[in-house]
Length: 568
Ligand SMILES: NC(=[NH2+])NCCC[C@H](N)C(=O)O
Image 1 (cartoon, rainbow, N blue to C red):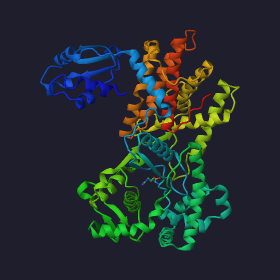
Image 2: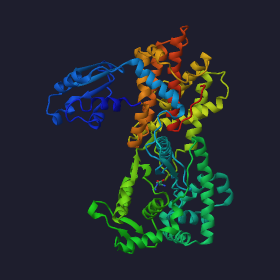
Image 3: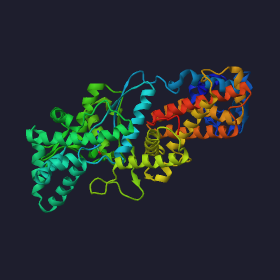
Image 4: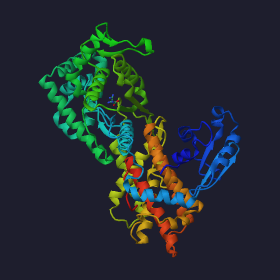
């Protein structure tokens, strides 16, 4: 069911030169229901049809004729407005939701084509911080949205497990580290000695040379270096895994930067062959002056490779391995130049798939005034953040619903959900200031609010104590023609389009904002219209609507990585 498409087809040919495609693009859903359910702004056709907007609207009205699905049409101020017949619209929407169930909103746009998503990608031996959380949450949502629309998503955690910093870490460990401390304190101990390295190296710059030498050894496969490095990786992964388990996020591959170590030489050769590489004081780089960008450094003076080298190599490898339709990289906006630079390098190498590489940047997160940097010691640890969210939610549940079973489980789902939703509640490019009160507000535009609304729908359905609706008799749909119920029907209808938009714009917040809209319209209905009434028909129609809200909220929450507990 696609009413825009349907209307466009009805209008095509009604005026000379009017095609369904043009009309479909122009049709809007008027924010004000007085303008109908669908509206065609005819001024957008004026130029093409060489007619005044109002004249176009009136001609369309005159040519309209009878349509059982449409109550009436009007031509007002240059708009052609269409009022759908509420009960047939309601029956159409509800029956589609009830038929598709957990697939409602899905489509097969991708036909199995692959989308490679590079997300989360924290750095070994460094804390998984709130910026990585955003990448994880946005990436995971996009992963699910693509799958829901018929693509095959491939999630890659491009771990920062390679680079000079491992030379530094090895030197630091040999100077000040001990096995016991690393084993008991994990990343925080590694970070401690890493910070110490920087402090001491300010006075003893020769440490930097030592570190570089160790990294070169590592790249060459030195056994001692490799053994330490592997151990640092294992320790870090164990900690990261705790986050992923809490968040319910999985990856198809953990091929981090080190995975490309033995693949970079071939790329460097290729760059040389294609005369793209230039020597500059012993280093090798690709000049990008022509494109108003600083050069992309590929090989350092000491022979070591760089972040750029690994990204170019990884992209070629991924294209070869997955033959992707798109490769999407989710990082903070601070890395935008990095991606622009190496996307250009791929293009200069002559790969026509360079335009299938997409950077998905996002804004910074700050927490109640604190700065979120890993360099110095003042790190906001994500595990602490999530644990605190769960605890706070537990307290709220304790007050709201002291007799609830499995409070811990629900507190986890809602507390973690609050953090995820908060990250997705605005356009990703906006900076976020995290506030506990806002994120956990059960009345605000939050994850808990949407989850709570879902649980409310479940509770009504439980109380109804009847088998869940699997279809709506068209004759019952007339009971849904009131404005509150129709408000819900309209939102339900929009789900599919919103998911599609979220995919095109790579913007999961379109889904999260949609969920708030649906929840709000449902709550208006819930407060105005008693559901468990005696009139059997009215009751059945309203219960079917509630069931559709339950299904759609659950589907939408799942798309952005939130669970939907039935009781809160
Ligand atoms: N292919 C990529 N460059 N992915 C993003 C990596 C992010 C990097 N490890 C960081 O923490 O900033």
